[in-house]
Amino acid sequence: MKILVVDDDEISRDLLEQLLLAVGHVDITKVNSAEYALCAIRETSHLFDCILLDIQMPVTDGISLCRTIRQMPNYRETPILMMTVMSDRDSIDRAFSNGATDYVTKPFDVLELNARLVIAARLSTDWKQRQKAVETDRLSEGFPADEIKLDIGKPHVIQDVKCVIDHDAMHNYLAQLGRRELFGLSVFAIKICDIEVLHASLTNENFITVIKDVATSCTLKMTMCRHLICYTGGGIFVLICGDSKKLNVEETLNSIAGNIGELSTYNPDDEPIDLTFMAGKVIKMTSVFGKNPSRLVQRATESVKLRELSRHADRASVPSTVQTLRQNRLTLLAVV
Image (cartoon, rainbow, N blue to C red):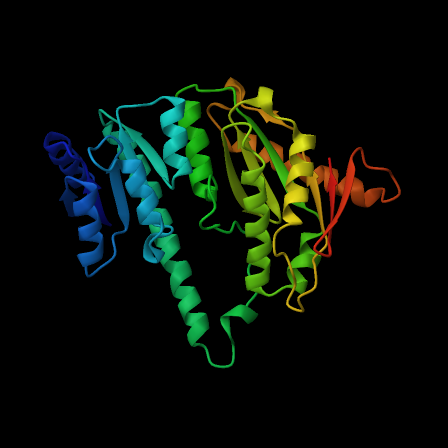
C-alpha cells in the first residue's frame, strides 16, 4: 500500500515508519502537519491507499484533517486510521463520527497495528474495485450506469451526513469499545418496510436520495444523545446511542418520520414516495458482546426483520404506534 503518515512528533513518525517497514510496507510518505499532509495529497501522482493521522497536532488536529480529507472525492472511502495515546470513549466517538475508518493507540503494538493495516488493505482494494466497476459501466455502450441496479442487500456509503459512518467503520468502532471494555451504549435498527418494491421503482439516484434523506432525518432527531448511524443495506439503518437513558425509540422514530416529510423524497415522476418505518428492539452492549461486537449489530438487525415479518403475517393487526403525516404530498407511517 501507498501510505501517508501525519504526525507532528518526529520520534513517533520514525518509529511508525520502522514498524511499517517491518510488516512489509515500503511506500511511505511522512509529514509533520495537516498543511503538509494536504500538500502531499494534492501533489502525489498516485493516490494514497491508506492514511494514518495523529489526533493531537498543533494548529489543525487529526480529526479536523480527517474531516477535510473526507470531502475530497478521491478519498471518500480511503482507509483513515487515527493514532493517539487517548483511549477514552469521547476520543473514539469524535474520531469515528468525523470519518475515521479505524483507531490505533500509542504506544504501538506491532501485532495490533499490522491487524489494522491488513483490514485497511482489504478496504482499499475493495474501494478500487468498486470505482473500477463504476467506470467500466459508464464506458459500456448502450448500458448506462444508472440502469445497472445497485445491490439492495449491500451497504451503501452515505456521504456528507453528520455522524453517519460506513459499515466497516461501524464494526471497527464497536470492536474498539469492546477491547477497552467501554460498554453501556445501546443499538437498535430502523427499517424501511417493503424496500424491494421501493428499490425496483426508483433509479439509483432516487434510491440513494431516499437513503440519504432517512439518514439525515435520523441524525437530526438523535441529538438527545451521542450517536452514530450506519446504513447496512436492505433498507436497514443501525443506530448506536451512547446514552441509553435518554433514548426513547418510539419518539425518535416518530420524529424521524415527521422530518422526512420536509425533505425532497420523490420518485422520477416527481410524485411523493410513501415510506413505512419499523424499529427493532434496543440491544444494550455488555461484556457478552465484548469479544464479538458484530453479534450486537446482528441482534439489532434480526429484531427489526422479525418485526417486519410479523407485520406482513398479520396486516389486519393494529400497530402499537402509528403516526400518519401528510406534508408536501408525502405520507409516512411510523411503526414501532
